[in-house]
Image (tube, rainbow, N blue to C red; front, side):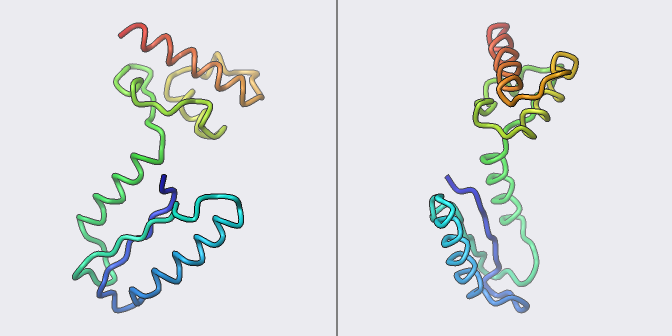
Length: 132
């Protein structure tokens, strides 16, 4: 999926809209050099938008962020449990944040390996789903 989003106004008077294609070409090239999918960088342009921001653009950014950032766990609510990204696909930082949001800091004390964080969060999620 798309891991990068570049939003730009079609009538930007400060940075010409043509710069988006140069940016997309350069980023796609770098992503490909690193072994990634060159199509993972999306450019969205907005008619009538100058060097500013619009509600349409903000909605697109919010949609993008919801897709690429795992939901936050809440220790007092199981609402997000169904939509949480597989812990094995999370970065260590994401795992630590999710563990904190789930109120699992005590159980995580002394853990240093990513696999330990994955196991702890996976067990929490499995238990939370079974409680539903």
